[in-house]
Length: 189
Image (cartoon, rainbow, N blue to C red):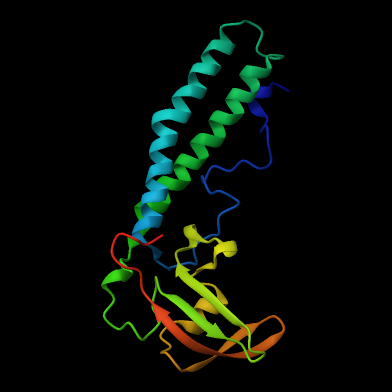
């Protein structure tokens, strides 16, 4: 069978979604912080203005070398071009659906909303800090959790001093909100 009719990789999909990124729940808005929006937009512009043209030049040069069936530069370049195009589609869709929430304008600073940095304690006395961010901004190593995560859902709308129930795989856990902070303008990370 001709290679033109065979899908080269099972990992590819036409929807442009990146398997490493979480999917949005059906009907949910894509809330994102201003800093997160800038990061995604900057990545998109870098891919369009720099990375893609560079790979296109490489593929054009490799194609001009003749036999493409055993040309590693050509084969790798075409694969990389598909990856870049898939990421561009993904970022474009996410940015189109994004609803930027500037949490520095939050008026109820004693209550947990999107963009808050929350300190809470578990029953065993352990202290935790999480920043509630959009699904495209998750970074667990730095305490950045998605607003749709179980801990964020438990904390949302809670006030300082309140105890809320966190549903975990091990069962329910009572956690206490100790402090709520919102970033100052232009410092949201």
